[in-house]
Amino acid sequence: MVDETSIFIGASRKPDDSYQRAEELLLRYGNRHGLVTGATGTGKTVSLQILAEGFSNAGVPVFCADIKGDLSGISMMGQAKDFLVKRAEQVKLDPYQFQEFPVIFWDLFGEQGHPVRATISEIGPLLLSRLMNLTEAQEGVMNIAFRIADEEGLLLLDLKDLQALLANIAERADELSSRYGNVTKPSVGAIQRTLLVLESQGAANFFGEPALRIADIMRTTRDGRGAISVLAADKLMMNPRLYATFLLWLMSELFEELPEVGDLDRPKLVFFFDEAHLLFEDAPKVLIDRVEQVVRLIRSRGVGVYFVTQNPLDIPEKVLAQLGNRVQHALRAYTPREQQAVRTAAETFRPNPDFDCATAITQLATGEALVSMLEDKGVPAMVQRTLIRPPSSRLGPITPDERRKIIAESPVAGQYDETVDRESAFEMLQKKAKEAQDAEAQAQQQNSGGSRWTIPGFDDVLGTGNRRPSNRQTVAEAAIKSVVRSVGSSVGRAIVRGILGSLARGR
Image (cartoon, rainbow, N blue to C red):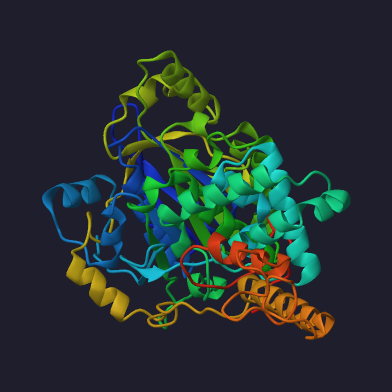
């Protein structure tokens, strides 16, 4: 039915609901990106699962987020349930073979997979400002902070590095304002308070070293299958901005690290972005422009990006235009916005004279979709009403014991478990403050001369000797105490930013 140049999606139906033909995704167009949409419960996760299976069997590594935990079943052998066997017969999937797939589990919190980390420098000021929901003025201060870090050689690896740098900037506000524009202590303080909130939400787990190596999500097995990296995102979804920031950072890192390869027989990596609306929700225009740029250019690096979301209106038009392979599950059309979504979805397909696309979208059954893949010369195929094939792996989540076993046997086991805390901005600023304090103390001692007298049992009330009046601090002491007070708990390390940042990676 299919060959090694394509992925079997399902079987299209004639107007009388009889079998028409196999619907396939051509691997040579797998890097032309795609879109999987549909209302809750219509089968989007299964469509994602069978696409991931197909790419893996073709030797293409896959990265995807598991929002509900259901996708974890791809790591286990499927079972011959009646409704699955019946669907296999309907789409003429013969033989219907069950498989388990090579899976690497990841988790930003390190609970349901290997920890995933990136450094502050790698994330960069643009993404970090959006993650923290900063105002324009505060974003300006953040950009100045990264500029100072670049100029003064301060590595920003984790949250305490950024806290220390901000405290230093607050102490030097007058000096820096004359060089970079207005830097106010209230703006710095507001950023510091936001960082504390971010840390309390668990984001500190994400910032640090060892940072995720792109090579570890682009692995293949000895039998030539692509590894499927599954990000546990059920807890992560409690902080949707962090989820979107991480996935956009990862996509930009792929763009920066991978070389130009042009058109290939199959992609080098396929990236599934589930709950894609979170990336664009309330995003500033500059960020949307960056996403559109990355999506448009990353194709030449051999990477395919597939957005998975409920509503096609969730994707900006410029990005939507880049998505060549489409799987549209059922949509509801009760509200004006839902009706608009149906019309938008229908208009993006190449029409089929056998049925009205807009009407069909509202009538699709679970596990049924309108499918249009790119065919020869990259032209979109005529949309077809298609029964999606059943997966070869398990349908539904795995058990905690099964997950622990897979994590223990993972090819990256032990590589990311322990955080690394090397010298960076926090330690460097502490050292500078201590040196300034020692220099000032030495100067005071030299100037005192030691010739005047003191009253025993009292501080040097006359301003001489080695002691100074109580309740007074030097400028250096105040600075170092400010740094120490500003720093939260110690977290991991790592990094330097990618396309959305500006430092060169130093690994």
